[in-house]
Image (tube, rainbow, N blue to C red; front, side, top):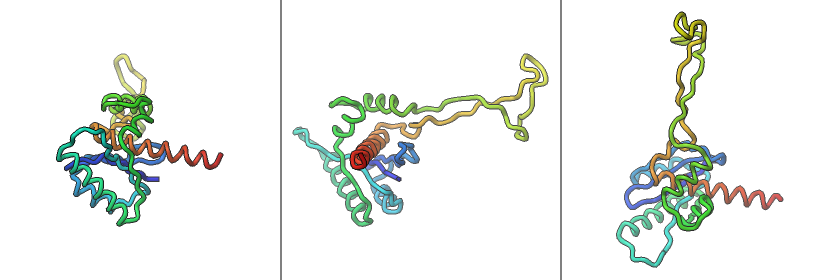
Length: 188
């Protein structure tokens, strides 16, 4: 099931495309016009959008521009019969982080603890026969041992290299958590 989490912004928005297994297939921060067009073409199973919530404080123009973008995203979903859900930031971060008021660093740490790292892991593997560099060492301290190479594998959250992409991922993760819990409750 392909789910797109979106962290909308006034001019650019971040999105994360995931499956029910929380694996990140794609994560980008793009111009709002491009995102609206891409969403219409992509046709995901569900769109999850971080919504706005009033805190009683004065807001500026960028907040209203973000609200307008949320409206555009909802309209694209309605025009193309794509189901969508809105979640305010405190709702999804409370579930993921276990505390009420959080910042981006706390969200990052909670995602790291649950899913793994952001970088790459380096491992060594024997070079398969027939590939360049294969064989055994002829001399030196490793004489007779098979030749090895270093392989770099991206960790699970490698594509989430900015706070906006992490927020888009987190809101999608929250949606999967909530819908999975609801399905289990119905079948119990």
